[in-house]
Amino acid sequence: MTARTDPSRAVPVGAVPVGAVPSGAHALATVAAALDLAPLIDGHNDWAWECRENRDYSVEGLDGALDTDTDIDRLRTGRVGGQFWSVYVKDSLAGPSAVQGTLEQVDWVYRLAARYPQSFVIATSAADVEGARASGRIASLLGAEGAHSLNDSPAVLRMLARLGVRYLTLTHVHNTTWADSGTDDPVHNGLSARGVEYIRELNRLGMIVDLSHVSPATAHAALDATSAPVIFSHSSCSAVTAHPRNVPDDVLARLADNDGVLMVTFVPQFVSAEYAGWFGGDQSTPHRG
Image (cartoon, rainbow, N blue to C red; front, side, top):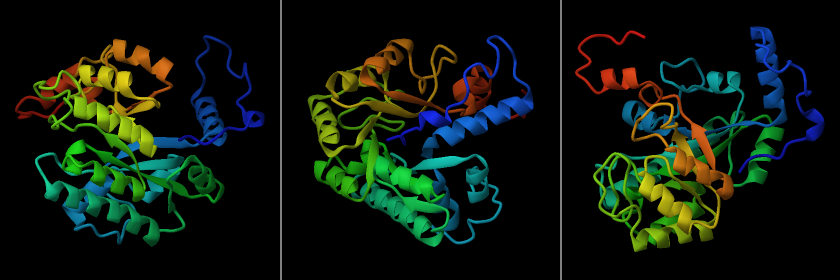
């Protein structure tokens, strides 16, 4: 779901000699040229959850400097062209409560776009992303994080698709009734037969299969079953930092034939084993590093 690029605006080949280290100014200019060529699409942002937890879902006052990781000014400064807003609730919520919480998250995204129409516009297709870019606005896409939000109902999945949700992360930190998480004890050997049917339904609906959070066995099973490219919306590489949220090389190698995408995240414990050790401890002393 990326916008097409214009070859005439490509960064000139040879602008930096091979092996040379660009200056800070040159690096910034190169980044700016790349972002002129194609918009930055961020695969996962929990601002809706933040506003649930700390703002009672209010969309007021979000146009100034905020203490949270996201605000409109920083989205603009970072040249974000498209944002997948995570419509997420903790997987400790079960059944109808998880469905309701997810719908409330969807509602927040729609209200955000309505409250700040100069900054955001709802997008459900690549054409919508291109239209948002042409109008100088941030394409606002939706991704549901964790199939617990479905209450194991294909009908709920279909209704989320009709509301504009364009990816489903198969698990969160715990297994679902048909898929194994990377941070739970496996029970399905990846995907159950019902899980394979969900992959096929996601393909039919035109929703992206998101493999962040899942176990390697689940990722392989999903890649076996899918007829469309997959994404990892917010994961890093196991070969760089061994962490259960990261993706091993044998899974990464399969993305080439699938035309899939790994959207790297810089969550500290996913990129630093030393920090992960501190984070998993008692945290009685400040982390230094």
